[in-house]
Image: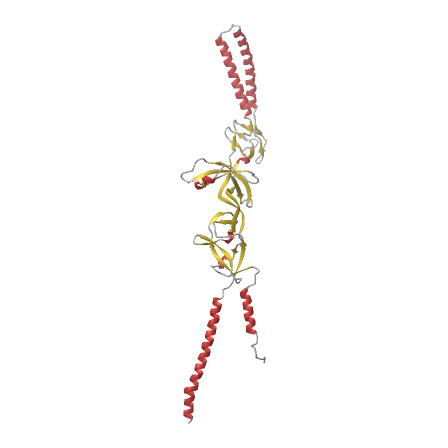
Length: 385
Protein backbone atom coordinates (compact mmCIF):
# COMPACT_ATOMS: atom_id res chain seq x y z
CA UNK A 1 0.00 0.00 0.00
CA UNK A 2 2.73 2.46 0.95
CA UNK A 3 4.69 1.67 -2.17
CA UNK A 4 1.58 2.34 -4.31
CA UNK A 5 0.93 5.73 -2.67
CA UNK A 6 4.53 6.83 -3.03
CA UNK A 7 4.50 5.88 -6.69
CA UNK A 8 1.30 7.86 -7.26
CA UNK A 9 2.78 10.97 -5.62
CA UNK A 10 5.96 10.74 -7.70
CA UNK A 11 4.17 10.36 -11.02
CA UNK A 12 1.30 12.83 -10.45
CA UNK A 13 2.10 15.63 -7.98
CA UNK A 14 5.77 16.30 -8.84
CA UNK A 15 5.15 16.81 -12.60
CA UNK A 16 2.28 19.14 -11.74
CA UNK A 17 4.55 21.26 -9.55
CA UNK A 18 7.17 21.37 -12.26
CA UNK A 19 4.61 22.61 -14.76
CA UNK A 20 3.44 25.27 -12.35
CA UNK A 21 6.99 26.48 -11.74
CA UNK A 22 7.70 26.52 -15.47
CA UNK A 23 4.61 28.62 -16.03
CA UNK A 24 5.64 31.12 -13.40
CA UNK A 25 9.12 31.35 -14.90
CA UNK A 26 7.72 31.91 -18.37
CA UNK A 27 5.37 34.61 -17.08
CA UNK A 28 8.26 36.38 -15.29
CA UNK A 29 10.46 36.10 -18.35
CA UNK A 30 7.73 37.54 -20.57
CA UNK A 31 7.16 40.48 -18.22
CA UNK A 32 10.90 41.18 -18.01
CA UNK A 33 11.19 41.05 -21.80
CA UNK A 34 8.27 43.44 -22.18
CA UNK A 35 9.84 45.85 -19.73
CA UNK A 36 13.22 45.71 -21.56
CA UNK A 37 11.52 46.19 -24.92
CA UNK A 38 9.58 49.14 -23.59
CA UNK A 39 12.72 50.75 -22.24
CA UNK A 40 14.55 50.16 -25.54
CA UNK A 41 11.72 51.76 -27.47
CA UNK A 42 11.62 54.77 -25.16
CA UNK A 43 13.76 57.51 -26.80
CA UNK A 44 15.45 60.03 -24.59
CA UNK A 45 14.99 63.75 -25.41
CA UNK A 46 18.28 65.43 -26.45
CA UNK A 47 19.16 68.71 -24.72
CA UNK A 48 19.70 71.43 -27.37
CA UNK A 49 19.76 75.17 -27.90
CA UNK A 50 17.55 76.76 -30.55
CA UNK A 51 17.71 80.00 -32.52
CA UNK A 52 15.18 81.64 -34.79
CA UNK A 53 15.47 82.12 -38.54
CA UNK A 54 15.41 85.88 -39.17
CA UNK A 55 15.65 88.50 -41.87
CA UNK A 56 18.58 90.88 -41.95
CA UNK A 57 21.52 92.35 -43.81
CA UNK A 58 24.24 90.11 -45.20
CA UNK A 59 27.27 90.81 -47.34
CA UNK A 60 28.91 88.64 -49.95
CA UNK A 61 32.54 88.74 -48.85
CA UNK A 62 35.74 87.70 -50.60
CA UNK A 63 38.49 87.09 -48.05
CA UNK A 64 42.23 87.29 -48.64
CA UNK A 65 45.36 87.92 -46.56
CA UNK A 66 48.27 90.19 -47.40
CA UNK A 67 51.04 92.24 -45.81
CA UNK A 68 50.68 96.00 -45.73
CA UNK A 69 53.18 97.92 -47.80
CA UNK A 70 53.88 101.60 -48.45
CA UNK A 71 53.77 102.77 -52.06
CA UNK A 72 55.73 105.94 -51.26
CA UNK A 73 59.06 104.97 -49.74
CA UNK A 74 62.51 106.48 -50.38
CA UNK A 75 66.06 105.92 -49.27
CA UNK A 76 67.89 109.20 -48.67
CA UNK A 77 71.48 108.85 -49.88
CA UNK A 78 74.45 111.15 -49.33
CA UNK A 79 75.39 113.20 -52.39
CA UNK A 80 78.74 114.35 -51.11
CA UNK A 81 81.46 113.05 -48.78
CA UNK A 82 81.86 114.98 -45.53
CA UNK A 83 81.71 114.39 -41.77
CA UNK A 84 78.28 114.74 -40.11
CA UNK A 85 78.16 117.73 -37.75
CA UNK A 86 74.44 118.18 -36.89
CA UNK A 87 71.67 115.56 -36.73
CA UNK A 88 68.23 117.17 -36.75
CA UNK A 89 65.80 114.17 -36.82
CA UNK A 90 65.43 110.75 -35.29
CA UNK A 91 63.60 107.53 -36.23
CA UNK A 92 59.87 107.98 -35.81
CA UNK A 93 59.91 111.73 -36.51
CA UNK A 94 57.48 113.09 -39.08
CA UNK A 95 59.08 115.37 -41.64
CA UNK A 96 57.91 117.71 -44.40
CA UNK A 97 59.18 117.71 -47.94
CA UNK A 98 62.37 119.77 -48.14
CA UNK A 99 63.02 119.73 -44.38
CA UNK A 100 66.72 119.59 -43.35
CA UNK A 101 67.54 116.22 -41.78
CA UNK A 102 71.33 116.36 -41.44
CA UNK A 103 74.09 118.92 -41.86
CA UNK A 104 77.57 117.95 -43.07
CA UNK A 105 80.81 119.87 -42.73
CA UNK A 106 80.82 122.39 -45.61
CA UNK A 107 84.05 124.43 -45.35
CA UNK A 108 85.41 123.33 -48.71
CA UNK A 109 82.04 123.59 -50.50
CA UNK A 110 81.40 127.05 -49.06
CA UNK A 111 84.85 128.26 -50.18
CA UNK A 112 84.39 126.82 -53.66
CA UNK A 113 80.98 128.48 -53.91
CA UNK A 114 82.33 131.88 -52.84
CA UNK A 115 85.17 131.68 -55.35
CA UNK A 116 82.78 130.67 -58.14
CA UNK A 117 80.55 133.66 -57.39
CA UNK A 118 83.53 136.02 -57.35
CA UNK A 119 84.79 134.75 -60.68
CA UNK A 120 81.28 134.97 -62.10
CA UNK A 121 81.00 138.60 -61.07
CA UNK A 122 84.37 139.40 -62.69
CA UNK A 123 83.42 137.59 -65.89
CA UNK A 124 80.04 139.34 -65.92
CA UNK A 125 81.73 142.74 -65.83
CA UNK A 126 84.11 141.75 -68.61
CA UNK A 127 81.24 140.46 -70.74
CA UNK A 128 79.31 143.71 -70.36
CA UNK A 129 82.40 145.66 -71.43
CA UNK A 130 82.92 143.45 -74.49
CA UNK A 131 79.23 143.71 -75.35
CA UNK A 132 79.45 147.55 -75.33
CA UNK A 133 82.53 147.47 -77.56
CA UNK A 134 80.85 145.04 -79.94
CA UNK A 135 77.84 147.33 -80.30
CA UNK A 136 80.20 150.17 -81.24
CA UNK A 137 81.92 147.89 -83.77
CA UNK A 138 85.20 148.21 -81.91
CA UNK A 139 85.75 144.44 -81.54
CA UNK A 140 85.09 141.50 -83.78
CA UNK A 141 82.17 139.15 -83.42
CA UNK A 142 84.55 136.33 -82.49
CA UNK A 143 85.92 138.24 -79.51
CA UNK A 144 82.40 139.00 -78.33
CA UNK A 145 81.39 135.33 -78.67
CA UNK A 146 84.42 134.29 -76.60
CA UNK A 147 83.38 136.69 -73.83
CA UNK A 148 79.84 135.28 -73.89
CA UNK A 149 81.20 131.72 -73.74
CA UNK A 150 83.39 132.59 -70.73
CA UNK A 151 80.36 134.03 -68.96
CA UNK A 152 78.32 130.86 -69.56
CA UNK A 153 81.13 128.72 -68.21
CA UNK A 154 81.40 130.82 -65.04
CA UNK A 155 77.63 130.60 -64.57
CA UNK A 156 77.78 126.78 -64.82
CA UNK A 157 80.69 126.67 -62.38
CA UNK A 158 78.78 128.84 -59.90
CA UNK A 159 75.69 126.62 -60.18
CA UNK A 160 77.83 123.51 -59.63
CA UNK A 161 79.46 125.04 -56.56
CA UNK A 162 76.07 126.08 -55.22
CA UNK A 163 74.72 122.56 -55.71
CA UNK A 164 77.72 121.01 -53.96
CA UNK A 165 77.17 123.38 -51.04
CA UNK A 166 73.46 122.44 -50.88
CA UNK A 167 74.41 118.76 -50.75
CA UNK A 168 75.97 119.38 -47.35
CA UNK A 169 72.42 119.87 -46.04
CA UNK A 170 70.54 116.58 -46.41
CA UNK A 171 66.86 117.32 -47.02
CA UNK A 172 63.72 115.15 -47.11
CA UNK A 173 62.64 114.45 -50.70
CA UNK A 174 59.06 113.59 -49.57
CA UNK A 175 56.85 114.11 -46.57
CA UNK A 176 56.58 111.12 -44.28
CA UNK A 177 58.08 109.41 -41.25
CA UNK A 178 61.73 108.61 -40.63
CA UNK A 179 61.90 104.81 -40.39
CA UNK A 180 65.69 104.42 -40.59
CA UNK A 181 68.67 106.52 -39.46
CA UNK A 182 72.07 105.00 -40.17
CA UNK A 183 74.33 107.94 -39.32
CA UNK A 184 75.37 109.80 -36.18
CA UNK A 185 77.26 113.00 -35.50
CA UNK A 186 80.96 112.57 -36.27
CA UNK A 187 80.50 109.84 -38.89
CA UNK A 188 82.24 110.40 -42.20
CA UNK A 189 79.44 110.15 -44.72
CA UNK A 190 80.35 108.72 -48.13
CA UNK A 191 78.72 109.66 -51.41
CA UNK A 192 75.94 107.19 -52.28
CA UNK A 193 75.56 105.73 -48.78
CA UNK A 194 72.03 105.40 -47.38
CA UNK A 195 71.62 107.62 -44.33
CA UNK A 196 67.81 107.81 -43.92
CA UNK A 197 64.68 105.97 -45.01
CA UNK A 198 61.37 107.83 -45.21
CA UNK A 199 57.93 106.24 -45.62
CA UNK A 200 54.67 108.05 -46.24
CA UNK A 201 52.26 106.00 -44.13
CA UNK A 202 49.29 107.53 -45.90
CA UNK A 203 50.33 105.57 -48.99
CA UNK A 204 49.92 102.22 -47.17
CA UNK A 205 48.10 99.57 -49.22
CA UNK A 206 47.41 95.83 -49.24
CA UNK A 207 47.97 94.05 -52.54
CA UNK A 208 45.82 90.95 -53.03
CA UNK A 209 45.28 88.54 -55.93
CA UNK A 210 41.66 87.74 -56.77
CA UNK A 211 40.51 84.73 -58.87
CA UNK A 212 39.47 85.84 -62.32
CA UNK A 213 35.85 84.65 -61.91
CA UNK A 214 35.28 87.63 -59.62
CA UNK A 215 36.33 90.15 -62.28
CA UNK A 216 32.72 91.15 -63.21
CA UNK A 217 32.08 92.08 -59.56
CA UNK A 218 35.21 94.19 -59.08
CA UNK A 219 35.03 97.96 -59.44
CA UNK A 220 37.23 100.88 -58.35
CA UNK A 221 36.49 102.38 -54.92
CA UNK A 222 34.31 99.41 -53.87
CA UNK A 223 34.07 98.92 -50.11
CA UNK A 224 36.62 96.78 -48.32
CA UNK A 225 37.84 96.11 -44.78
CA UNK A 226 41.18 95.33 -43.20
CA UNK A 227 41.28 93.21 -40.04
CA UNK A 228 44.41 92.99 -37.90
CA UNK A 229 44.85 90.04 -35.54
CA UNK A 230 47.71 91.94 -33.93
CA UNK A 231 45.31 94.71 -32.90
CA UNK A 232 42.63 92.41 -31.49
CA UNK A 233 40.73 91.84 -34.76
CA UNK A 234 40.04 95.56 -35.07
CA UNK A 235 38.38 96.50 -38.35
CA UNK A 236 39.73 99.35 -40.51
CA UNK A 237 37.69 100.78 -43.41
CA UNK A 238 39.35 100.49 -46.82
CA UNK A 239 38.56 100.68 -50.52
CA UNK A 240 39.71 99.27 -53.84
CA UNK A 241 42.31 101.75 -55.08
CA UNK A 242 43.35 100.05 -58.31
CA UNK A 243 42.45 96.98 -60.36
CA UNK A 244 45.02 95.55 -62.74
CA UNK A 245 43.82 95.66 -66.37
CA UNK A 246 45.21 92.17 -67.07
CA UNK A 247 44.79 88.66 -65.71
CA UNK A 248 47.93 86.84 -64.66
CA UNK A 249 47.67 83.84 -66.98
CA UNK A 250 49.81 81.45 -64.95
CA UNK A 251 47.88 81.97 -61.69
CA UNK A 252 44.52 82.97 -63.14
CA UNK A 253 44.29 85.95 -60.78
CA UNK A 254 43.89 89.72 -60.90
CA UNK A 255 46.06 92.09 -58.89
CA UNK A 256 43.91 94.35 -56.71
CA UNK A 257 45.38 97.20 -54.65
CA UNK A 258 43.37 98.02 -51.54
CA UNK A 259 43.90 101.44 -49.97
CA UNK A 260 43.38 102.29 -46.30
CA UNK A 261 40.90 105.05 -45.45
CA UNK A 262 41.89 105.34 -41.78
CA UNK A 263 45.39 104.09 -41.03
CA UNK A 264 45.07 104.25 -37.23
CA UNK A 265 47.56 101.87 -35.63
CA UNK A 266 48.24 99.95 -38.85
CA UNK A 267 51.81 100.01 -40.07
CA UNK A 268 53.59 98.77 -43.22
CA UNK A 269 54.80 95.20 -42.78
CA UNK A 270 51.81 94.03 -40.71
CA UNK A 271 49.75 91.09 -42.03
CA UNK A 272 46.02 91.76 -42.32
CA UNK A 273 42.91 89.94 -43.45
CA UNK A 274 41.34 91.72 -46.41
CA UNK A 275 37.58 91.56 -47.00
CA UNK A 276 36.14 92.77 -50.30
CA UNK A 277 32.40 93.49 -50.09
CA UNK A 278 31.16 92.07 -53.40
CA UNK A 279 27.43 92.45 -52.69
CA UNK A 280 25.13 93.65 -49.91
CA UNK A 281 21.57 92.39 -49.25
CA UNK A 282 19.42 94.26 -46.74
CA UNK A 283 16.50 91.80 -46.38
CA UNK A 284 17.89 88.28 -46.62
CA UNK A 285 16.65 85.14 -44.82
CA UNK A 286 19.42 84.25 -42.36
CA UNK A 287 20.28 81.18 -40.31
CA UNK A 288 23.11 81.11 -37.74
CA UNK A 289 26.38 79.58 -38.87
CA UNK A 290 26.44 77.66 -35.59
CA UNK A 291 23.52 75.56 -36.80
CA UNK A 292 25.52 73.97 -39.62
CA UNK A 293 26.55 70.28 -39.48
CA UNK A 294 28.61 68.51 -42.13
CA UNK A 295 28.00 65.11 -43.70
CA UNK A 296 29.89 63.83 -46.76
CA UNK A 297 30.82 67.31 -48.00
CA UNK A 298 27.25 68.52 -47.61
CA UNK A 299 25.88 70.98 -45.07
CA UNK A 300 22.72 70.49 -43.04
CA UNK A 301 20.78 72.13 -40.23
CA UNK A 302 18.25 70.61 -37.83
CA UNK A 303 14.87 72.39 -37.86
CA UNK A 304 12.40 72.21 -34.99
CA UNK A 305 9.24 70.19 -35.67
CA UNK A 306 6.33 70.14 -33.20
CA UNK A 307 3.71 67.37 -33.59
CA UNK A 308 -0.02 67.85 -32.99
CA UNK A 309 0.29 66.35 -29.51
CA UNK A 310 3.09 68.80 -28.61
CA UNK A 311 6.07 66.44 -28.98
CA UNK A 312 9.10 68.37 -30.19
CA UNK A 313 11.58 66.73 -32.57
CA UNK A 314 13.91 67.74 -35.39
CA UNK A 315 14.02 67.40 -39.17
CA UNK A 316 17.33 67.51 -41.03
CA UNK A 317 17.35 70.14 -43.79
CA UNK A 318 19.97 70.45 -46.55
CA UNK A 319 21.62 73.90 -46.60
CA UNK A 320 22.79 75.35 -49.92
CA UNK A 321 24.58 78.63 -49.06
CA UNK A 322 23.88 81.62 -51.25
CA UNK A 323 25.85 84.14 -49.20
CA UNK A 324 27.71 83.88 -45.92
CA UNK A 325 29.49 86.10 -43.41
CA UNK A 326 31.16 85.30 -40.11
CA UNK A 327 27.86 84.86 -38.24
CA UNK A 328 25.08 84.01 -40.70
CA UNK A 329 24.34 82.06 -43.86
CA UNK A 330 21.75 82.98 -46.46
CA UNK A 331 20.39 79.64 -47.81
CA UNK A 332 18.88 79.32 -51.28
CA UNK A 333 15.76 77.60 -49.93
CA UNK A 334 14.29 75.37 -47.23
CA UNK A 335 13.92 77.88 -44.39
CA UNK A 336 11.20 80.35 -43.40
CA UNK A 337 11.39 83.37 -41.11
CA UNK A 338 10.26 82.39 -37.60
CA UNK A 339 11.34 78.75 -37.84
CA UNK A 340 13.80 77.52 -35.24
CA UNK A 341 17.04 75.66 -35.83
CA UNK A 342 19.39 73.87 -33.47
CA UNK A 343 22.62 75.78 -32.77
CA UNK A 344 24.01 73.59 -29.95
CA UNK A 345 23.68 69.86 -29.22
CA UNK A 346 23.65 68.67 -32.85
CA UNK A 347 26.12 65.87 -32.17
CA UNK A 348 23.46 63.84 -30.39
CA UNK A 349 20.78 64.30 -33.05
CA UNK A 350 19.46 62.32 -35.98
CA UNK A 351 16.33 62.56 -38.08
CA UNK A 352 13.17 62.78 -35.89
CA UNK A 353 15.15 62.89 -32.63
CA UNK A 354 13.14 64.25 -29.72
CA UNK A 355 14.59 67.39 -28.16
CA UNK A 356 14.23 69.70 -25.21
CA UNK A 357 15.71 73.11 -24.48
CA UNK A 358 17.65 74.31 -21.48
CA UNK A 359 15.15 75.04 -18.71
CA UNK A 360 12.48 72.68 -20.06
CA UNK A 361 11.37 69.85 -17.72
CA UNK A 362 12.96 66.52 -18.54
CA UNK A 363 10.09 64.14 -19.48
CA UNK A 364 12.31 61.11 -18.86
CA UNK A 365 13.04 62.25 -15.32
CA UNK A 366 9.33 62.88 -14.64
CA UNK A 367 8.42 59.42 -15.94
CA UNK A 368 11.11 57.81 -13.78
CA UNK A 369 9.80 59.65 -10.73
CA UNK A 370 6.22 58.59 -11.48
CA UNK A 371 7.25 54.95 -12.00
CA UNK A 372 9.20 54.91 -8.74
CA UNK A 373 6.26 56.34 -6.82
CA UNK A 374 3.88 53.79 -8.33
CA UNK A 375 6.22 50.91 -7.44
CA UNK A 376 6.65 52.03 -3.84
CA UNK A 377 2.88 52.59 -3.22
CA UNK A 378 1.12 49.75 -1.18
CA UNK A 379 -1.18 47.50 -3.18
CA UNK A 380 -4.93 48.16 -2.88
CA UNK A 381 -6.77 45.97 -0.34
CA UNK A 382 -3.62 45.03 1.58
CA UNK A 383 -3.00 46.18 5.07
CA UNK A 384 0.39 46.90 6.56
CA UNK A 385 1.98 44.48 8.94
